[in-house]
Structures are given as structure tokens and as C-alpha cells.
Image 1 (cartoon, helix red, strand yellow):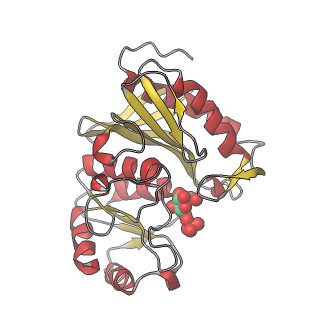
Image 2 (image 1 turned 120 degrees about the horizontal axis):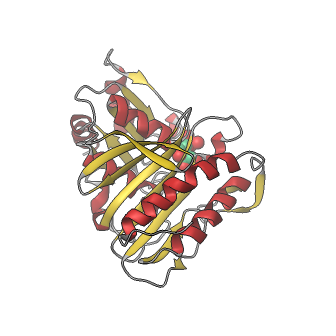
Length: 287
Ligand code: P6P
């Protein structure tokens, strides 16, 4: 699968899009548990390991790619060049594979070596393995949605923005472990009769609903996990970059996710994304 465009960012995006159909088909027969855990201590599914290796081989060999890093591997693969640095969550929500629910592939393309702050992103996006395989990608301050068939991308929407009126909300973590201030915020959101609960167990499916209908998704800081669950490099930054490009906001509870300085490749971050007024209100409540 050769990458021919001289722009490494375009080649990374095009390679991920072309790989999506193969990844979707490759899920069949790879639903069992692998013998390993990922660097976050989560048991890997066979498909996690397989999708990670497929993307590592293809992305690290693209001209201009300096590094390939993944949620599924502790070490960074050196790509040999020094233009862009790629961070991937090969299969977000792979625990949904057993129940045949939505899953995704998340990617961030940075212009600094990893780990890097989200402010160093030049593009990000996700593949959503839903009834239709779609790609949503942010670059140069704008978000584009594609449908993917047979490795080809078809633009279905340009300049994607969050709808003005928020509709859906989804909050991760066990309720007894939420901080009181967050629980108070949730009660306020739930008290609005216009809002609907949407939580599917795979961030990409939930965030894609927020992008489509407006609203908020959060996996907050928890009493037993102060930095929440989601990973800054592979999930928080790429999601925040895209949602902000679509006119929304992100927050770790007090500031944009993109301002968070990483200390380790596998840092976790409390993640809140969605309509600006909802995130502003969240920060007021948590303050
Ligand atoms: P919980 C999937 O494992 C994931 O990383 C995200 O995609 C998802 O939002 C979250 O974890 C779900 O976590 O604790 O609800 O199972």
C-alpha cells in the first residue's frame, strides 16, 4: 500500500482510511483475549494486537513519519524521518467487539516528537466502525466527514460544526466514584428535558454522537483514579483537537486538553468535550 502524496500528513490520513475496510473485516475471528496487557494494564483483545501491527507497519514506513506510537505498545517505533509523529489508538472500545457494538480507530498527527502536547497536533481524527464505516478528520481548523467503502473515501460533509443546541450526554466511570462536584454537574445536565443519555462504552461512538447532535461526553477524574481513564496522547488530544476545530470545547476540568503538558507517553487525562457552554459550565462547577 504505497503512499504517493509528498505531504506526509495526507499520506498518513489516506493510509488509515484505506486500512479501515481491512481492519473492519479483520475483526472477524479475532474477538478472543490475547495473552498480553497493554501499557495501561488492560487485557488486550486479539484484534487490538493485530490492528496495531497492521497500522505500525504501514504508518511507520511513510516518508516523513518520525515516530509511530500506540496505546497498545509501551515503546515508540522510530520511523526514521522527522516531519510528523503519529499516535494511534488502533481499536478504541475493543471490549465492544464481544457484544458487536461500535468501535473506532483514533489517530493524532503531531509535529513534535512524542509524548507531545495537543497544541503540537497538525491533524487528528477517527474511524467509526458503525453500520457504515466513516472517517472524521480535522486539519487546518476544519473538520471533514467521509464514508469509506473498499478503501476509498467519499466526502459526505465539509466544515462540520457542533449543532447549536446540545442534545446528548454520556459520562463514563462508576457513579459512586464520581467527585461530588461532577455529580452535581451531571444532575444539572440530566434535569434539562431537552437532553438524552447516550453512552455506548466506546468513546468514539459517544463522541461522534456529540459531534452529530451536540452535547457533552466526559470520562472524568474519579476518586479512585484522579486522572480518569482515557489516554492523553492517543485519545484525549486527538478528540479535543477535532471537537475544538468543530467549534466546541475540551477540558481536563480546568483548561483545554490541548494545553496539558505530558510527562509520559501513556499519561491519562480527565476528558470532557462538547458544546462550549456546557464545558464552560462544567469548569465553573468543578472550580
Ligand atoms: P468503561 C474503551 O475501553 C474506553 O477506552 C473508551 O473508548 C470508553 O469511553 C471507555 O473506555 C469506557 O470505559 O469504564 O465505561 O468501560
